[in-house]
Image 1 (tube, rainbow, N blue to C red):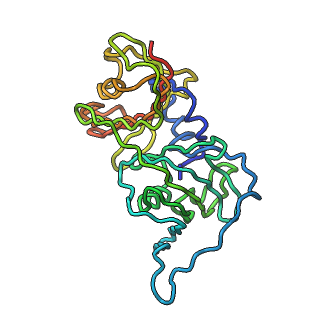
Image 2 (image 1 turned 60 degrees about the vertical axis):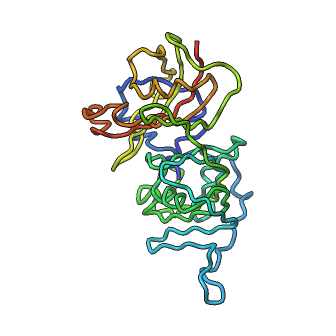
Image 3 (image 1 turned 180 degrees about the vertical axis):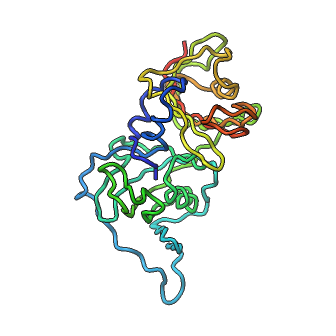
Length: 289
């Protein structure tokens, strides 16, 4: 699941700066998304019994069990499978196997977005999610080796804890396909306002992810405690971000997926983004003026 409970409520705050100072320390705290440190009473959560792996000697199609301990149990199972790079809207509650809830989107009152293939989720969550389908309901049971391992996470997840995620896959976000291969997955849209014109100031918060063999967050605006701004069609951000922002309005949120040639290309970005690596900005647009 989302990697470190770095609070999905934080994701909904307006974004901050593109400067790289302090990124490495911030990455240790915020690397990859884990949603809201919950305010839910664990006693309200009914823990269902495990399903049988077989029925009358035949495999139970509502159960998947892998040798390393990853397990999925469905209460509803559809046929439109989630694909690598998809953005899906989900409802979820995460708990340690003992039953204590530590994370959920319920306090937000609305589904939240997950994007695969950017290091946003712990390994077991992502691998389980990619076996599910749009419209599915069920739970992903994640062994500690595919979750937070021997260290756990702060005081929230104990060391060597197995994780259970009750999840509903609400919908898939279809991307807007722009020039040069830039994709914009709008997961929050607005019917008001207009897209930017030349020289307007765009102010937004963001999380920046790298793809590739070692995906994960490499930068975010929250570390500077103020949103980041740039003038549209100026050149102080990567070209792909300009292209992606061309379809955004104030109040909208989106993942902007940028091919390496529209990002840092063959040079990469210091020790943060390797050469020839695609990147993804998770943006929250505060204003366009």
